[in-house]
Length: 115
Image 1 (spheres, rainbow, N blue to C red):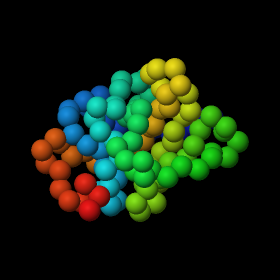
Image 2: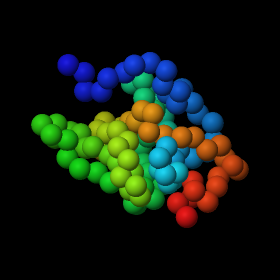
Image 3: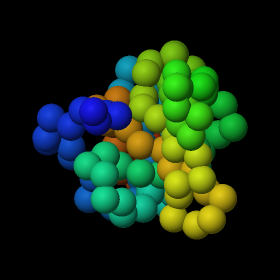
Image 4: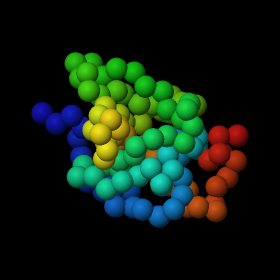
């Protein structure tokens, strides 16, 4: 059984333009494109959040290596953090699906800046 279902059409998997990924529901800043990296999963992968409170995390039932992740501002479900599965030893990997919007560099609004 797959941990996450993939239905195709993931638009950010191979997207590496400069900018910011925000919560699709409230626009709060979550990840910089600088923390995004290529990964074999069909979802975008990041190593760190923009703000300490960008996301909230809680343990995933029966999966000690994974945390459920939601928006730190509105609580929208975003995806998962896989502990010690990042591109470098000790880094985590955040993966998300359609819960993100991309804001190109220079197009940030007050909503995407969390104001």
